[in-house]
Image 1: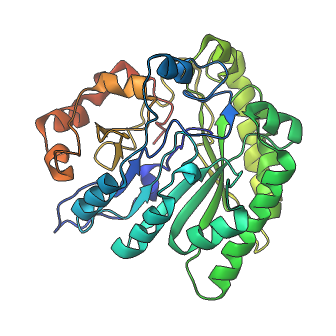
Image 2: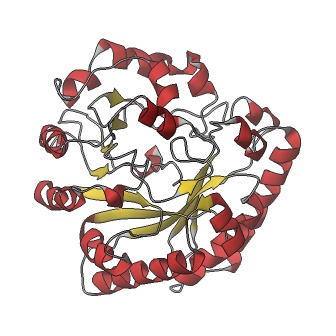
Image 3: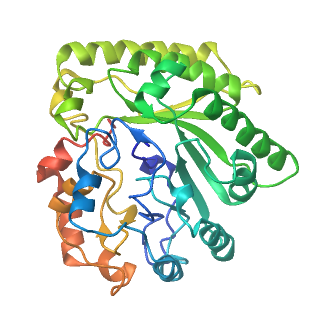
Length: 358
């Protein structure tokens, strides 16, 4: 699966100034070691990654979050600005054995669920999962890395083009019926990792989204985890950047040409032209979309400030653990406030793929 990777701060609702200004969204790394695919860009499950073999050789157990931790954090954060939660964007969250409990907690606490899935809908199939997810869903992001069977299956190893295409149709049909009956309308998104192998198909992904009724196409540039993926980055040199910029222009034209069934444009997000300096800094004037807005909780309860690959975000500091501290304790701590004020000095932040121009 592609990293979620979560939506940017532009999705955030206005904060209630009278309340503790905590995160409006929290991502829980529920089950990062569980996945039914081996996407080539994944930090954990790629065939090029040594993460899973190394964990097995070290005798480490699978990282699976205690459901009681999620309940405690929700009880702590609700009423202090929390609007939605995200189950794991690493691994496949629909393999987490407590997913039904998370869905029920969303209803109980009055928060939405923002889900990223690889589109295989394991276990129950797309229809049954849609019936459970749509009533509480704010957005379902389906990892979608090509407009053709060849590219999709080349990137998302173990995926089946015909199956994921039919699953998308099924999910959207359930979503539309639920909304037509006066229920919640859950947005559906195609989410890509932008790479050399799939960038040229981006306009065709927009066209496919319009045909299916997918509201949005978004993504992020590749985090390079292994030497085998270095030549896949569209930020690696000026020639790659030029090709990327051409794909952006063609995608923007596709939005105008191919409309959703109701006439709306497919929303493009994080699909913008890059400057020559993007090899080092993707958005020199861009601010961090996450600090002071969102929070991440690792499977063991560790607080993380962003969605950068785990080994990299650990370099930003140690901010505490939600097994023993409250959200507010960490949110207002000296360490976290220092990072918020000084993140631009961090090499990871300067080169971060998630920042965008103002």
